[in-house]
Image (cartoon, rainbow, N blue to C red; front, side, top):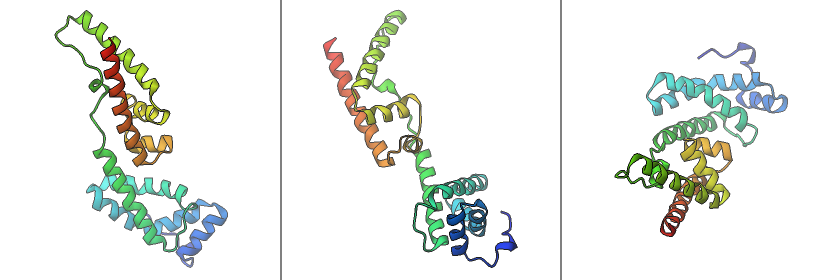
Length: 191
């Protein structure tokens, strides 16, 4: 962690924040963040239990600040920053924990006792049926299912990419999986 610039020592956190908001000059936000970056580091270290991950998180949190600081009312910057850092760490830990090993194979049944040529034909039929069922899903479910299973994105990445909340993403995936399974079963019965 680098030292704060003595040029700004006379400015309070509130002054630096106000200057950043007025001038959109990252120097002010950088100075403000630098004053509290050690606290951010130790918050991250407490959650990640790893020095390198914590240092990376300090940089990522600064990038988040650039987006968040103008959108929220901040009365006590250190306290607000502590909450931002804590939430960031929790989201990172949850996204790592929630990376699912579920695949689309659970929707497609492969009869392993068939000869390879028959197996590939059956697989192709089921994949075609699955594509048709995917197209029938509501758009939000379809997009979430596509990003989660086919593009192997985690909940947080899907949330960022789509603008849906984490709760919505999880719901769209859960409901999409259920609807996809129902549709696949119906198509299987019709064959």
